[in-house]
Image (cartoon, rainbow, N blue to C red; front, top):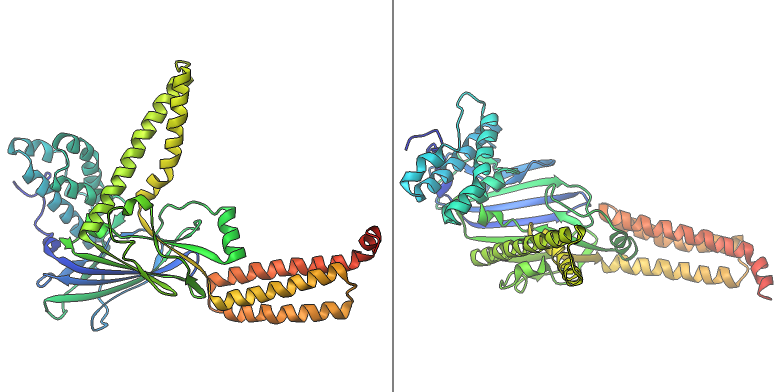
Length: 449
């Protein structure tokens, strides 16, 4: 086999690098901004002039910094060079698959992926990736789910949405293990919950979400588990993943961490062994547990697709007027199953860790004091004649509590929205108290007072 025409170059030498431990921390600052922190422990890396980091989304990100154990900044390779290395990795996996199939099939299969050396690296990467993706389903149907083909499939589909950043390792001190620390701020779209994902899918805000946060100060923090470190690593192998979630300032964790969807974590110790304190939740993911989660998610999606096909088939029969009463009853049962499986199957495409948080005890006490004063003022406005002096005293008492809330919320972006909602509601109630006092002679007379 020769390089080109579907066969790989020999440039992807980094495929023998191993990540002993990957520590991932998601720290949330606002509804649309969270900070990602990756800490890699590499082994078998000596002699490599560059090292791949975990896949990244093309979404908006800022303040990316990558340093070594001595806090020395590492240089990212230019995008063109990164594309060359990524293509080399794709060809290496393609080559491994070709080597696993009968020799008589290799030339025919290899010809399905073309290489045009006259194209730029950007154009060539798009063409090669498109060619590989176009034949993957056909190849899986023909050769089954071999390890080499599954490896190629995971990598190619991941490459369709994400890219691999590379850093130069030249000049780093040679040792058995290498520590690299990468941090980046990520901007995401508004979703119903705070989500630790870059540009990932998210449901829009609902009234329930808004009321839960603005009235009760509760939020759900969802962090996508970077299982791609196991399923399609840009290096050879990942041994363990450590995931830490840090809730926003001014909030504290009130419930044990949970997995989304719940069925994805069956048969694993990920959620059962989770640990948490006031602001931080931690889970450990080993190779076996990661494999089990992926298998569970694939099963959930596959079962939903089967139900969806049955739902569509039965619905078509009924629309054509060919269905009996028994068929309609079966369709209703299938529709219920379809609805029940729909949300978990969607979540299974991106399994996450959910951490439920609420405003800290101090802010809850101040909020409670605020509404005690408001409730007392509302009662007095309804039952007594309040003059201007009374309103000034009530306003002063409320202002002291609100100012305490505002001071507490300084430099806590998410908490500001909660304080603003409480203050706006308090203002509306204060106006009601004034209206009740002004109209009391009217409704008092009607009530015989």
